[in-house]
Amino acid sequence: MRSIPNRLQAILKNIRESEQHFNRPKNSVKLLAVSKKQSVDSIKQAYESGQHAFGENYLQEAMDKIHYFSEEEISWHFIGKIQSNKTLAIAENFDWVHTIERGKIAFRLNEHRAKMKKVLNVLIQVNISGEESKSGVSLEAFPKLVAYVKAFRWLKLRGVMGMPAQYNSFELQCESFAPLTKAMNLHRHKFDSLSIGTSQDYKAAIAVGSTMVRIGEGLFGPRQK
Ligand SMILES: *Cc1c(COP(=O)(O)O)cnc(C)c1O
Image (cartoon, rainbow, N blue to C red; front, side):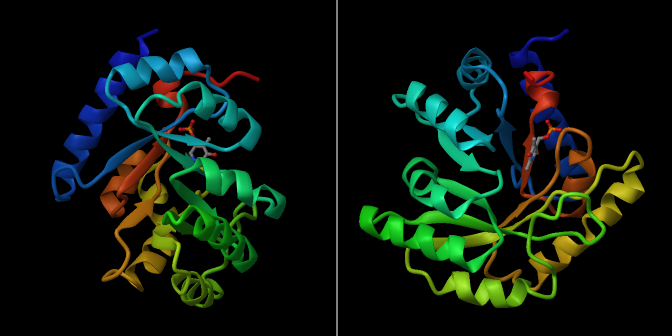
């Protein structure tokens, strides 16, 4: 199996080639390395090869890693489901939160960041109907949540995140992203981030406008159980 530095290089090359192929501006797609259930050694290998943005889903696990790498210049993104009693720790430890799906969570994150006097980058997670995991706000409820989140001084609403079901064909993958690109297009002039695409479908995601692909196993290999 290839090493993490080699895989990182290959993924970045694929991202740059996809940008070119689908007429996207050069360097308009960023890589978020999804390090949930991966070791600190794996993160270290990616970091030392130049990867400085990492995504985590589970708070306790993430906090151990953030503490371990506290001297490094890493941007940490929370991409897991948020329980409201976890908002303080999330506000204190993360630079981005991709998974805002309820007003209450936004309200609490804003309050905690107000004390820190530091703006938090946030994305609203949009649910694709028929999806197995019911995470995210419906497309119908999306505009109201946008208006609510936008009003908070210490949250910077950057865009939309989503995780559709997995399909094998490129065409179905592109189609599965349609509700997300639709949500994004409603606010094209204000939003700058569309967080879609994983190891399986990031080329399709780039084709339809992703600005941040979230890649885990394709970079690090299989996750620990
Ligand atoms: C685990 C996860 C990913 C990465 O998936 P891979 O298939 O490992 O690339 C991306 N986004 C979210 C929200 C995840 O939970």
